[in-house]
Length: 105
View 1: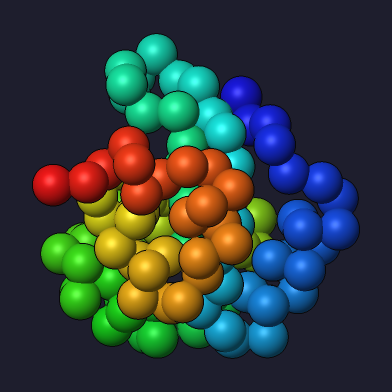
View 2: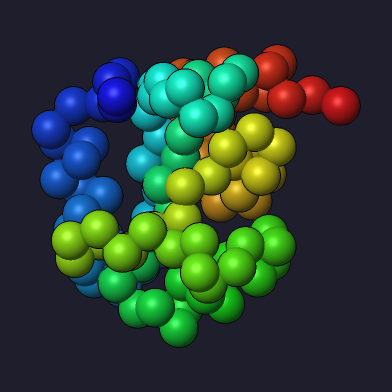
């Protein structure tokens, strides 16, 4: 279950993904399969080759891409989530979801 985002943020993410950009969308998320994870960041891009190359920097495998609808993306958790957001300069998302204090060290 996802929460903590609005339609405007979701629409902007979808537009960026469709435009072939590496786009990030962070939201609160609860899933019993991932205990201890309270957020997820979707790193998406419609250009699969570009997304695969981007994912290699973080040790992400192509088979982990979620091909949902027209918005292929990796689901990022924990330290990988934090590192990717920091590398992209997305401090607003890091601060908004308090990720720095949760994953220090």
